[in-house]
Image 1 (spheres, rainbow, N blue to C red):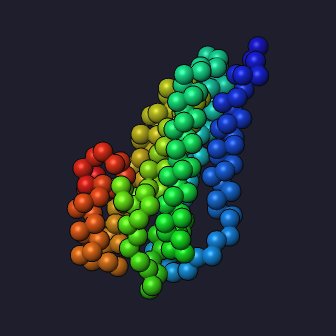
Image 2 (cartoon, rainbow, N blue to C red):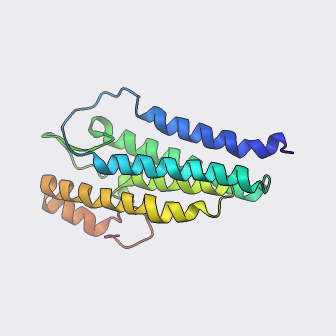
Length: 190
């Protein structure tokens, strides 16, 4: 028999996923540009959806009950994802896009969370999924995260880096030398 507390991670997972999907439909005052590629966006969306779905299924099937330490840690990590993402979207302003999209008037943003990492929105995606797996006490779903989501993410980063180098040249190369890609504590070219 599940208690109400046992269902809290389920509700949190649904709310987390709904908040992320909502982002696709928010109208923003952005400058449009040429979208260079869509496949990695789809791969990230599908693999992220798979991680959340499998974590949810794993939580319900394994039914190990509510684990307060994992839940609290997961909620903190997932909450950090919203802070990082909001800071990145705010710093990008009218340059923000779900896609790899370079505009003629594009500016190289180095403020906000871009001071610490070149791709804070991807850091937020990692935090979001790690948070979900933690608060749902998922063990096996980590394999899907490692073998499906992360490769999609790294493919996306490679493509975005190429577009940024093509747009900003040496300025971006210098930024890349001094600022880590996704994790603030790893080497600059990770």
